[in-house]
Length: 628
Image 1 (cartoon, rainbow, N blue to C red):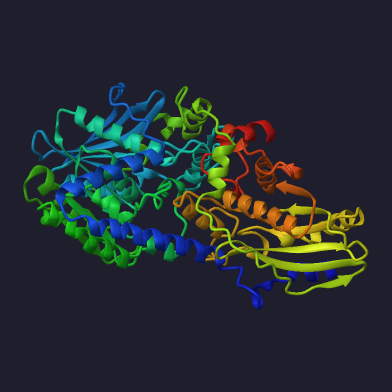
Image 2 (image 1 turned 90 degrees about the vertical axis):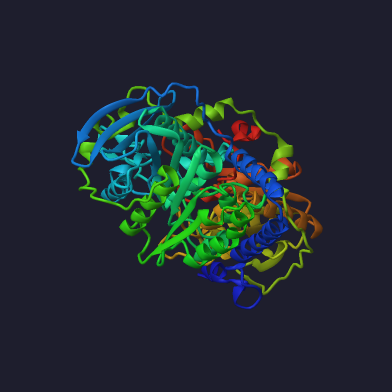
């Protein structure tokens, strides 16, 4: 019972609010980045300076993704699987090869009334499990095609006919599609130092290759559109593929500040790694496309905040004006919650007709969406059932085996990057003794604005500060009761014991910003914080390793000579990394998490996965040696 009381104690009530410090820390770092980005934009006064800025942004974005696995010279091996003729359209189910063994299913809408050749639009879908087969997206494609445009809809990894975790033995999916699959495979890519979006972008660029290969398409008149995740992908294509001549990204563009304020975590492939380090907000994404025709599509009741969309539009108009093309930027909004509405589709269709076909046109008759089975391009509706088909898992694993390992200098840079060490200001809010044990809760600064919390245990008869065991548990001081016997045994062995709460653990667990998700689950508060840290070149894993190193420094200052790290679960990874940088500490790990399982095995345990996903960590040479 007394141990439970110790476990329940928190200094947040009177000493420091530990529950909101991580989110405030991230907000402050973001704000500094936003100010610096705004300053860079304000300094651009000539078109020449703007062009130089554009190219630097584009290069930094692609480099941060890990480069693009795109090769225009590879054969597409495209096939038309099925053709359906309707009153207004000819619809083709197609399949092309993006990379060897990577098949992309698509639906091609050929309007019967069109120029020949005519403009074409690549449509990338939002996060619907059934991808391009989703009736809402079918209807949008039909509306745009009714404006005299060829439309190609494709499935990205994890959606439609590209869901990789279908198990024939149970006739079901082991990992659900869209967001869950993007997360599951995205974690692997992050650990190998890449963004999963590199594969999504390359597949889309091969979709452009396919459109150009069609004789019905004017190769100089290619557009792109999509909503939600498809809006993200449209934006990415605007940045990376100069062949896109007009774009209408929907229900995504706002500002990072407003996304941060919403408290909602995005999919892994939607996170632009290191983007805040080089000043890449949604503003910069649009500037990469300037001065081409661009229509921003938005709805008034979106979780991508409309106020940010309007700010984005007003701020970037200046650059279209600077280029002498002020009429090429438009903002269209509809009254709706988050979706690609028919009204937005009609606006996009008219926009593309004028931008690509140079003719005014409004949407006409577009017919009724087909059944999902009628649009299948792959056998049984899944490319994963094709012989020797590559998936995001297998592509990333192959890339992992080809990459060079990193060393301690890399690890130190990742852990110490952009830290502001300050005086510890060690405080003991209270203290008491029971059953021969002395108990002292404590707080101290690890870095600017971030405190760690811990509870010291020792025998009342053993005041000697020589030996100390620092216990690293995934739940920190919230697991004291579960380890009560172990704590007492360590104390009776003549050691002081410190139960440590690093950033985001135990009493430092951030307050929920989205209570629909449990804190340790994907899309929970820790996932939200970790993904925002990725844009700053940081991670929870790096911060926690830094906390442990600072705690060791504090303990030495307090007179402890022999320091041991006792760690279990995910925290065992932190202990191993910390001991690599401070060789004077000893470590003992219990039930350690095998980090490389995430990269090397098809299935892995993904609970509290944000605790481990430091970009590039799987390449660190000692991980493979120690955590097998």
